[in-house]
Length: 478
Image (cartoon, rainbow, N blue to C red):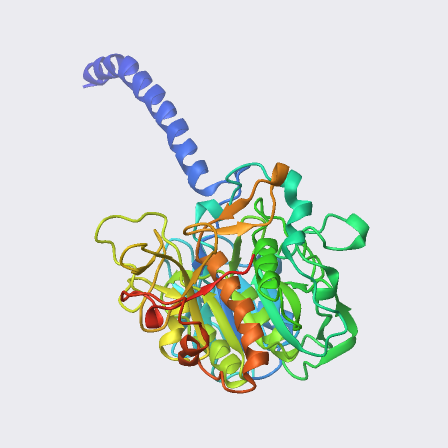
């Protein structure tokens, strides 16, 4: 018996050695996999959109109370969070709050209650916030411009930026005919020349606005001492007053320039406020957009221009802010939305589009929301059609067209006086927003809803077809 054991042991030695080596190599591979999955890496993990949530509290709660409630919920779910793991953003002019957890953690909203779920689809724990029996909770969708050509330069143009403002025929700054327009975009580029913003917009067109006094859930009132000529920043890119446009194509600056140009040949002074809700990559979130909407509303803005949106599900909190703006009599001019591709038979009708595009889709329910798409007009038939990759519907989308270039909008002078032609519903929207600003002053109350717009458009700017409202389109001024 002992001999047998000795024999097996001798035979096993090389086998066991091989197994040990194999196990060691396998453990290295496994460790590499585990570390790739769970360990710290130099590259920051991508944050999923659902790791962040927006909520409105019915009663004031401190940041520390919120953090303690989230930590308790994490424990209930079998996880662990620290104070530093929880990021809280508060809207200065509203009770809106954004909560962000580390990547992998999920904040859920169910039946007006909130819970947190551990990474990997684990257990969830309810969040108990004292004094708040019910919560208004929404997922923090990401918003952007949905077009690569609006993310990067199609050709070098920086040498010609100082010429863009020349397309604006200045209205007398002393004019008493004024309209306030908020631009929810990537900010306004400043080159420091003469201390002004004359690359895209004259300083006399900017509206001084205020933030609010306190950042608790009640009593947010405008602070006369807190004013800015540059608007406000609602992204994580810098502080509240950092509104410099850091996108490669100066997206928000182009939008501001297009709006201002629509006031040429009028005696109406646009008072523009840049509300920076998109960062240098033309990306933002619903929290920043909604907070900016409430701030602009409190500053008495008449028109919102939103050259942005998201594809996905309806967010109940966004609907709330849209409804409040509508009840305040604010017009919302929004991009109808772009697609990255446009294949034969592809559905681009906003009424049947899946997933839907917001906020443009809200136009079905609210009469002062004006989605806009770029259109072209066939020379022979006069048929008006939406340009490639752009959404439309004849139920509530208004068309926009440039005077000199098909399916694009001409931006002043580029390098060596070469025009820069820009593409997308993002640029169609400001053309209509500026035009609408002029019409609201001229109409003296006769323009009260979106269906009144076609009646203000000249008969010459009409065609045939079935893609935009009344087959009419607003022509861009130079």
